[in-house]
Structures are given as C-alpha cells and as structure tokens.
Amino acid sequence: MKTLLFALKSLSKEDKAFKQKLKNILGFSPTNLALYKQAFRHSSSSKEISEHQQSNERLEFLGDAILGAIIAEYLFKLFPKKDEGFLTQIRSRIVNGQNLYILAKKFGLDALLQSRLTKKEKLSSSAYGDVFEALIGAIFLDKGFEKTKLFILNNIIKTHLDMNTLLENDTDYKSQFQILMQRQKKEFEYVILKNELNGKEKTYVMQLNVNGVEVSVFEHKSKKVAEQKAAQLALESFEDTK
Image (cartoon, rainbow, N blue to C red; front, top):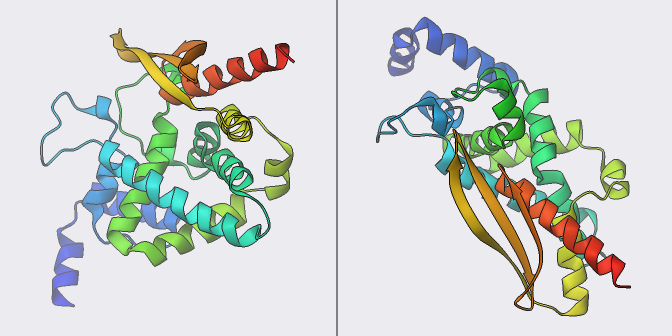
C-alpha cells in the first residue's frame, strides 16, 4: 500500500492527467503507464527510437492478434452454423482499417496520439487504426487476457458495433476475394512490388496474383488500402469475364 501511494505521489502532473484520461476511456485505472504511453507513440514522433522510447508498432502487432482472436471467438459462438468463409468475412469487416479508424475517433484516441504527421497525413494513413490496436496490446500486457476480452466485448462489440449493419454492408473486398478463391479452389497472393519513401511517407505498390498470374495492381500510402483496392479491381475483372 505504501509503495502504491508513493508511486501515485511520484507521478508528474502530466502523467496524472494522462492516467485520468485513460481511466475515462478504458473504465479502469491503468497500472503500467509506460505501456500506454508507448501505445500512443507513432513511429514519426521521434527521430531516434531507443530501447526506452519505442514506437507503438510492436504493441500494434500484438493488439491486432489479440483483437482478432477475441472477435473470432465471439463470432464462432454467435454463428454456430456458419462456415469459415462467412466468419472470416465478418471478422474482417469488424477489424478493417476504416472501422478501427472510426472506433479510435469515438474513443478519443486521436487526441492522445503523438506523431509528427500532418492532419492530412493522419487521415490518409492507418495511424488511428494502428493506435487502437496498440492500445489493445497495452491492455493485454498490463491487465491480462480476460480483462482485455471484457473490454473488447463490453466497450466495443456491445456498445459500438451494429451486427445487422455489418451483415448488410459488404465493402471488405479482401474477404470477398478470399471467399471467391476458396470456392474456385485457386491460389492467390499479395505481392509488394515497391515499398519506398515518397517524401515523408511510404508508398506501397501492391500486386494481386491468382495461380501465379497477375490480375491487378494498386498503389497507395497505406498497405491495407492498397490490398483492398487490388482485391476490388480483381473482383471487378472477374465479374467482367462472366
């Protein structure tokens, strides 16, 4: 108890304010504040990312996996008679870049994001979606799987997701294309033809191959958007050949 009181007293005003903001967002008080600071630290915020000043990329990787697993289990129980293709498609709609961007804004994570990106760059990149996944990673490391699961189920799925709308709207072209390829028993892969800095941001040139043959190419600042657009073009080309 004395150690906890000392730790609270030793927090700076800035840290206390940050902790209170997190508590308002999460519904619980964070323990390891450093994890959450890292979650909001975009790779552009520091020229030198050291051992003690890491960006949120590793937490984003972890949060993406945790979020995907919890959503998968939820859908598996919600739709006991649906096949793998359907479950994959609905999960992708929940965790796609646009949906994560909307959730990040709803939770007010954009106000806490530390980056050197301009407003336009933030909107055209996956920074908001990435910070949302990084936050999930921080919660997992700080509070464990069960606490993270409860947060996702109560604060995201039950509060912010309309399952009927998700079932009706089908804008996840990657999932659509994956299901089509599974039905036709064809192999496909996304290949990055070019990944280079174009000014301050990276540019991805994404090629989609089916059975080793190119069917579409798309270029964008966001890897996820490039993949979605390549899948959309491929679907349109398959539709034209019917």
